[in-house]
Length: 411
Length: 49
Image (tube, rainbow over all chains, first blue to last red):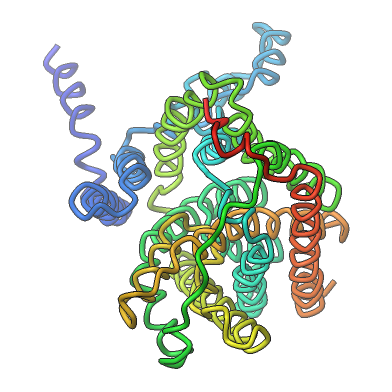
C-alpha cells in the first residue's frame, strides 16, 4: 500500500520533474512568453481580444504533461481497430488511445479546416462601412500598392532558404490581416502557424509605432501639408448593396482559390447593407465573431509548444513580418508621391500608408500625422477609403497568390 | 521551378493580378454608381437594419 501511495505521489510531481530538465527549461521560456502575451493584451491593450486567448493557449500547452494538443485516434483508424477486434496488435491499440486533447479538438474544429478565420471575416464584413471607398473608388489602388510588401518579402524569405509554401505563408504577414495570414498558414505551413499568427497580430498592433517614421522620412513638409477636398456623398444605397456581390463575383472569377476569404467578408457586408437580416448582421459582428475569435486565439496559442516555437525560424519569421509591414508602408507612400505628382499636388501622399488592412488603425495614423504638421488638415475620410481598399486589397492579393500557386501546380 | 524564378513569377503575377483585380473593381464601382445614381430617397433613409 505504501508503495502505491509513493507511486501515486510521483505521478503528482511528474510535471514539476519535467520542468527541471532541458526540455522543461524550454517550456518555462514558453510559459514566460505566454504570460507576456497576456500582459500585453491586458495591461498594454495590444490586440487584447487575440493576445489574451493566444497567451492562455500558449501557457496551457506548455504546462508539462498536459497533453492538451495530443492527437488521438481518428475515426477511420478506430473503424480499422474495431474490424480487427481482439486480433488487433497490442502496439496498435496503445497508439490508438482515443484521448484527443481538448485544445487539439478546438484546433481540428476550426483551424485545420480554416473555418474560424472565415467566421471572423463574416463579422469584419458586417462591421465595415465601405462608403468612403465607394465615394472615391480610385483610392482602391492604394489598397493594391499597400500589398507590395507581401511580394517583396516573399523574395526575401525564399532567399533566406524557406521552402516555397512556407515563404508564401510568411509573406502574407505583410497583408496586415490576421485572419488571412492564419487562413493561408493553416493550409500551407501549419507548422509555422503559431509564430506567423503572433507576428501578424503583434505588428498590426504596432502600426502606430512602425508607420510614422517611414511616412516622415519619405515625404516633404509641403507634401504632408497637402489638403484634400471634403468627401461628398455620391453613392446610393442600392449601389452599396450591390457592391459586395460584384466584388465576390469579380474576385471569384479572377482568383477562385481565395474565394472563401472574399466571399466571407462580402457576405457580412451584404447582410449589413441590405438591411433585411439585421439579426444575422448583429450576430455576425458580435456573437459569431467573438466566439470564433476566442477559439481561434486559444487554438493558435496551442500551436506554440516549446519544441515547435523556440527555433531560429521563429526569429526569422518575426524579422520578415516586420520587414513586410515596413515595405507595405514604403511602397504605399511612394505610390502616394507618384499620385501627388500626377494629380498636380491634389493628393496627400500620406494616404498611401493607409492602404493596408489594419482597419481603422492605419487610417487614424494618417489622420494623426496629417494634423501633426497642419492642424487644419482633415485626411480621415480619404484615409478610411484607402484603408477599406487595403482590406479588399489584402484579401485580393492573398487570393491571387493562392490561384497563382495552383496555376503553378504547387498546391 | 527554382526559387528565384518562383519568387519573380509570384511577384510579377501577384502584383499585376492584384492591381488588375482592384482596377476592375474600380471600374465596376463606377458602373454601379451610374446604374444606381444617388436619389433624393437615399438622403432620407438608411438601409442599416
